[in-house]
Length: 554
Image (tube, helix red, strand yellow):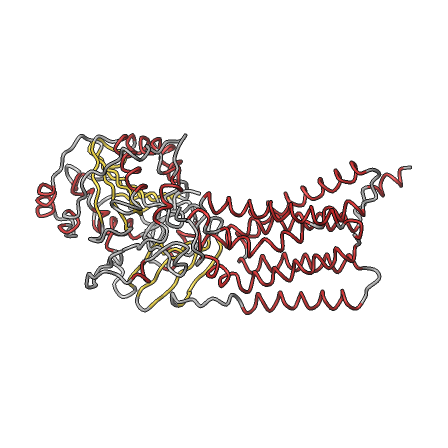
């Protein structure tokens, strides 16, 4: 009796198959986010597309598998797994090219990632859907209910293992191609095991062929041409793909395919992107710049702003950067050096502000997920927290990507309205003369102020800041119309929807040391319609990637 009970717990071949299908299907779903995000961002629309496609493909596979369950056998499941592994090899080899092709489809921004997810992950997920009904048909359990419950349990346990292992172990430790290769080998190994002990030539040859195909796909790499320059460093962090790319004398930090920081290798003190000069405007608004003691940057990236403040002023600079590998890359490749006056805190920006007892004279919000400010750093609660952590004459600045007016300006106007609700006085500055999508700097003071351009221009003349801000002061924007946009709150912050109108528009970013001319569209267009171009932004990450999970830009 006890022997029979123990044998009931010994996994059968169908049990192993359904467990492995759960592991790989959920592992691929988590991996899909990392593959799709560099092209389309990690917005709610992207993840909605991923979840929708996976559930739809699995459901269709369950349905078709159930209809054909009468023909189920270990051999048929073996072929299904080999077919899935073969498609995984295609994903490894051609994902970049397939993403480019899919992103060129003329779809509204919120649906833009759907074709790419469908092409890349629909077929293998559909095939894996056959395994559960086949396993139920082959189950030794008595009765339909017991067999189906057994299969559901094993498949769900496999999904838990796949999700947990991919999220917490594989992605932090391996690259996307290596993870895909691992899933492919697991599928091939399971397919091979299903045919044992009676090894027949065709399944054996197919297993060897698919395994070689996976190795070749991973070894050759994606077929897409990298136009950006020489990749000097690349890794998958816990939050995003990180790349450091050299093009001529400029070194650029890419996070999930978007440019997040740049440095001139010949002149490291130069502001490559014009808008990073605007970070110094708060020093014109404080009562006495020499009395400024503490400055906080939320978001590190390449640390352009923090390094510049430490170099120009006698201040203590704290930086809240969520992703430790971003900070390490800044040290290794962007000449960041921590010191008594510059301290890096590996922590979410909002959590850091909530837990610190220090007050700051200047707080700069420069955190991005790909090219979108993390939602919890856009909300009224965060703005009120920042206001509480400022000194009496403290100044808050937020760097946002949006159009200054018209189509594509919704996020800027909503963010302005939210900041203005939390602070007595609010100002904003455009960073380009063109009306396209650009970096807009929103500046707010804790004190009730009424600065004019003339007054700030006079302060710029009289204060020795080590940087001339006359052109930046002249870029003041009029107070925007905000009646048609919401205050962003914890209960309602539709950032994805507000930013979706910027997809496909030109993104203008002026660079210093160059003749100011209107950029060519190919160099500034963003979004799925122009997949080769990632929005430049010199920001840092401050939270856990619309236009596009957590790190930020400078």
